[in-house]
Image (cartoon, rainbow, N blue to C red):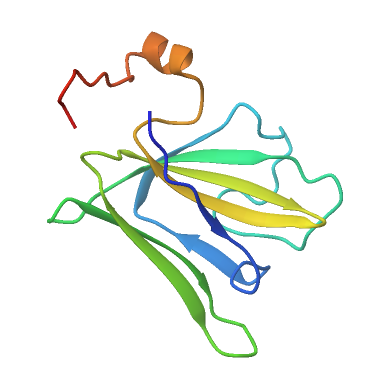
Length: 137
């Protein structure tokens, strides 16, 4: 299992930021609070006791096999700011999202990966664990 963890924070991340991705299906993680108010695309002000929140985005690739996702904030005093990532869907079929929007811990993880959140044992049980043989890449 491989996951590329890209942290996004201040000044890009804030209440006016949004995550933009070609998502066709989203699965919330089992650690998410039952009263999740924001969902995967918006980011409230930092608040005390904000829980770890995760989402697995199933995305659509472009005609070159690439997925493009971005975090965009149109309303900064310095002007619009964004971060775009692009990656090959064949090797990284999941776009994992980790939100920790607590006081002093205000961060978003945008994480292309070969598997959804969870353990190797869970991925193996679900039939989604990809094994590489010696010499494979």
